[in-house]
Image (cartoon, rainbow, N blue to C red; front, side):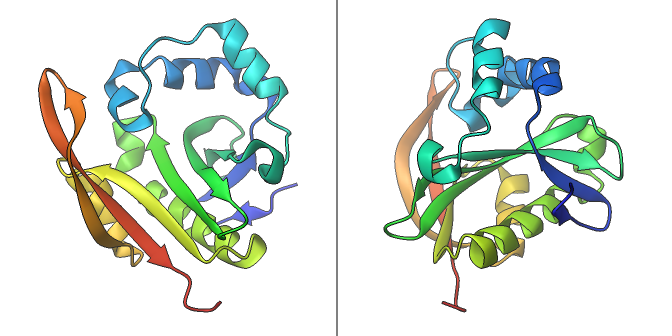
Length: 177
C-alpha cells in the first residue's frame, strides 16, 4: 500500500529485497560525509537492519524510507527521520539520492515535501532539523526551498580529507501546531 505518493515518486518502507540497494548506499564512500558513516557495512549487518526495519518510529527513534520513481519498486534514494524525540516533537531529516541523473529531476524536492507533510500532519511534530555541511550548496538550496532556516554554525565540525569544515544546522518549525 502506497501512502506517501507524490506526482513522480513515492516513499515506502524498506523491504528485505532492498538489501543490495541499502548495502550499496551504506558502502558508497562518496556519501559517507553526509551519512556520518566511517566504516563499511557487511551484507549480514544490512540484512539484520532490514529485518528490524519494521520497528515503530517510537521504538527505533528512526524512520528510513525508500524513495521510488513513478510506479517502479526499486529504490533510487533514501530519506530518514532520525533522532526522533516524541517528548519535544522533533526529528532530524536526512536524504540521499543514489545517482546524479535523479538529482536533476526534483526527486529530492518531492521526497522532502512528502516527508515534511508526513512528519507534521501524521506524527504531529513541531519541528524538523537538518545538519548540512556549509560546502553542500545543493542540500542547502533544497532545505531552504521548504522554509528551513539556518539557525547556527558548528565550527570545524566535519573532518574531510584532512580539513575541518563547518556544518550548519537548519530548522523548520511547524507553525500549524
